[in-house]
Image (cartoon, rainbow, N blue to C red; front, side, top):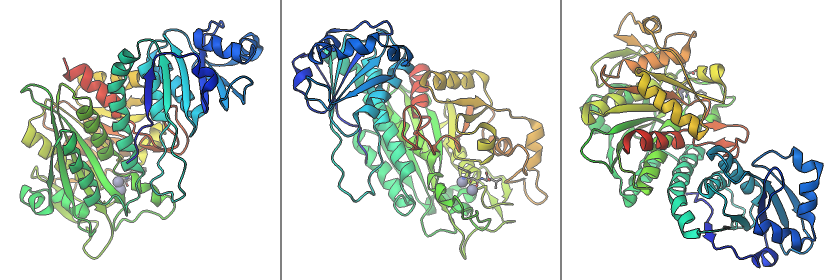
Amino acid sequence: MTSPISISFVETDLDQMREREGKIAVFATEDGKIDASARRANRLTKGAVARLLDSEKWGKVKEGEGVAMSFPTGLLATALMVVKLPRRPSIELARKTGATLAKFKGDEALLVGAGNLTRIDEISLGLALRAYAFTDHKTETETEAGAATIMCSKPEEVAAAAKPAMALAEGVFFTRDLVSEPANVLTTNDFAARLAAMQEIGLEVEILEEDELGKLGMGALLGVGQGSDAPSKVVVMQWNGGGDEAPLALVGKGVVFDTGGISLKPAAGMEDMTMDMGGAGVVSGVMRALALRKAKANVVGLVGLVENMPGPNAQRPGDVVKSMKGDTIEVINTDAEGRLVLADVMWYAQDRFKPAAMVDLATLTGAIIIGLGHENAGVFSNDDGFCDAFLKAAATEGEGAWRMPLGAGYDKMLKSNVADMKNIGGRPAGSITAAQFLQRFVKDDTPWIHLDIAGVASVKSDTVLAPKGATGWGVLALDRLVRDRYEG
Ligand code: BES
Ligand code: ZN
Ligand code: ZN
């Protein structure tokens, strides 16, 4: 498991500026105002900081970004960065600043002279999140990443404020690790074992095996996994930090690998389907963060873990399966498997927990990438108030989310000649018909949001808070939703 780098908060000790090896960062405002740390750095470097702040270059530096000077005279450090930041940055700017520090830091130790800046907790979160690297399968023994030390006034207070932020970083890292793992490592068994291990941090975790799922009538989910040797599972994680109110249910698609099944996917890019458990990964990361920060809310996370493989026992196009709800489904395309998994897990979640609301997450359709690219997840909902609350939480956290429509006209596209519905609606509006399919498994009185995260779970270029690869998209937004709506 990848752990966030160690970040400690200490009283400002200006003598450290000269003595520290590794890298050093100080801050200055747009108009060149500096604090004691930056002043000391300036004195030690014989005015280099002041010259930078007087230069034309400083005017061009964006807030939250900085200028690095290599091997500065007067310091033992290998580099000194001056970061442009107002005294009271927004959350977004503070996190971006943290990301700047992470990129500057690299693998070296970092000393930050933060003085009495506000939002040092958010700067730390940005630093922790951007410093992620998935190195579990690199055999070259890389040098351990150096720690970050933040000098500030009232370090105990700042450390206390940063604690929930560090819980969040751990949750995001948990998600990113799961999404990054190859499918020969993250099997359904391995995934379930990693979730069971979270009992140590206070989550109640149950693993439902195939015989149990059969008894529950989950024919839709089991049909997807029947072509694989890996046993299908549903894992239930409960965090009961609230009173006796009904929980929020989070449901995730956990297809550990999606070959498409008999409706086999083309070879090019198929390796990306190691991330087809992204929805389950986000649910798991949120549950981890909630437990680590001891959230005062009741949240239950359920993931459907299956592998979609071709084989002698695989589901065929044309097969008819029966869902736990009782509705029958004609499987036209075995590659539209995520919705089959979610249908049963969502029904089970409502049947057992009578949740106050339900959010499902899934790398569900390629069509959502055509529609929204990698900037926004697709958001579908049957409840405007609930949906607006989520969109607000996502906006606050800087996680792109865009609402898409639902409607009876789309639902009609799922009509089957032989069963109650078919599992695809055809090429037009592919993400919407997938959502319509899911809505058939949502009870009328359950406020529900479906998040299609196919475009955002893993990306091919760096984002503000993550290096290229798994993003952990949704962990921050859902944690924020829980804080704003369920923690009073
Ligand atoms: N896992 C895929 C969707 C996906 C595509 C996720 C690209 C991430 C990146 C899903 O199971 C799938 O194969 N969907 C099909 C549905 C189609 C057969 C109706 C698709 O989107 O092509
Ligand atoms: Zn598929
Ligand atoms: Zn899939």
